[in-house]
Length: 359
Length: 164
Image 1 (tube, rainbow over the protein chains, first blue to last red):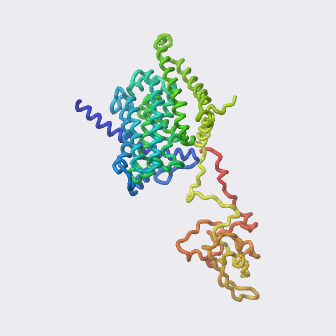
Image 2: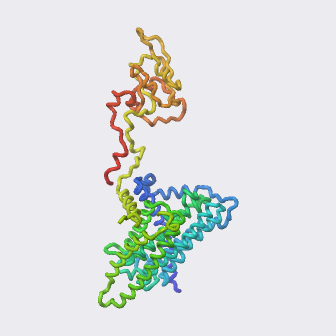
Image 3: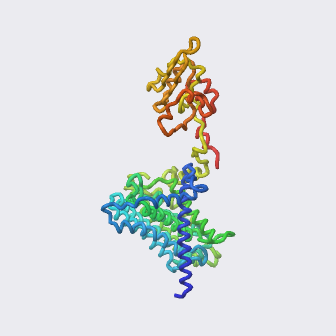
């Protein structure tokens, strides 16, 4: 390891920290503004022009709040939980390429690393649920653990489709291999990954862990002040990370015409986040059995099918490459059609509680 | 074929919210933007017309709370002179009975709704404070001739149309 490596790492650690924190602030503002517009409100518009400074005002307010630890809480677990929940989201960004070569560490197992680190956030949430010594917190934490473990399966399987095509786990190679964004070549995979990630970062409509109507605020009931703010920031940090990973895997990362690569990357990240917001503003929260049923009975079979389909296509293309030219256009249309057909078909098959409960 | 259980409902909902995104916000940004209240708004405070008042005290008798206090003395000819016409608006419940009962149309409900004050003494209004002025305009409650002159009420339903 030579000196240049250290400089590279130092610079990129600063860049990623800056990127993550500024994106979190931008996302908080965007979320409040866009959700407001979806609901025919104006969103924040008092602090600064168009309310852009609202996040800072909230931050100052939250800093001045009293830090309360419940009397019978597990003090150290309670203290560590927000940090453990926040850090993995930043770690994920280490392997996300902002443009060709702009990456902290081009791991050759990049996507595996993302999957492994991404699931760590749940440890923080579970620590919060356990450490608070509150029954609602614990219920929320148990739910989250079950949810994240369940959705990890279809998410990983949908990534397999991408890996089969690119033949690499490295995020940079995955972007390089995308002649068209993989959302077109892997529409089903994208959908499964998108929904699974939404569940994994606990965003609405899969935000059962903080279902206000059932368990007050879930795992962060007993948190106030800066610790609560860390959870709040962590939620958005996870959203940033998830948007960046989806951009890299399915929207061809930094690639794009005319505009500079970094700008394309930011535009795509913003678009993915907007999709999250659109979904949040439309769909009501799922019930626990619906949530589990959706993962195991809907996403998992489709993800398995997607793996087999992609595998067969990759094999077939290697034979036909000479006659079809550089790009498997037939598969593009076939996959789109199959994705639509399968979703409609599986929606028809999808039953909860032995066909008792209508969804 | 019925497209009921094919996930079409989700697509429908998503399309609806997307349409909402381009609609004009329904929010009224209050201090900067005000709505015109109803023509027959029973707004804060009364408007008293001293030239029409005969000091008959019908309003004072009609008031269930006894908020209106009238003291009279002998005036010119066979008229009473109003010495004191005091209304404790702090206890007023805006039933409008005084306005309805006035035989000479000498009272009307007000149009305003921004009259909070810092102490209780300020809400007891003397006869000078009750006369019509720039910020004390009568509303059309039980006064059809005033109602006819009032501007049309702004309803939010008229603002839902149009894009922004």
